[in-house]
Image 1 (spheres, rainbow, N blue to C red):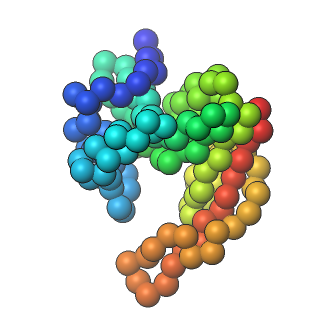
Image 2: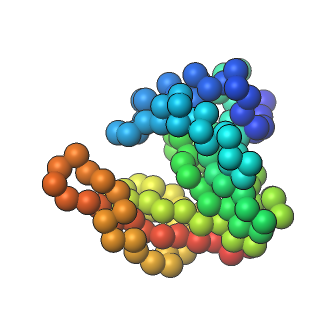
Image 3: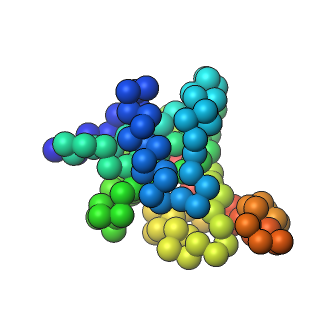
Length: 143
């Protein structure tokens, strides 16, 4: 059975391992602690026998800002990311926002499939290891 529930401190290392396996700039333990010190920050984990994914977000009044969704590669393309989004859509919010690299076509298509719409571009939002910065596509879904 699939469970989606708030992350506990005992799960930090599981999330950090997922981060290291998926992202070029993974979150550190210190960053994770700093996020959790903010009252509006949340991470929900998705698990079936073990934690295999998560969604991190800020929930402020009637809006959510998704920070990151991470699903272990062997569990990707199995609707688990959509399940996480569906779960936060159940919260008492009017809008959900996020930014994604304009180069990340896979993620953009995933979010569009989940009802998000393009609302703008943030120029030079992401740092690159090279001498240029990457634009972010700003997306929103109204509930």
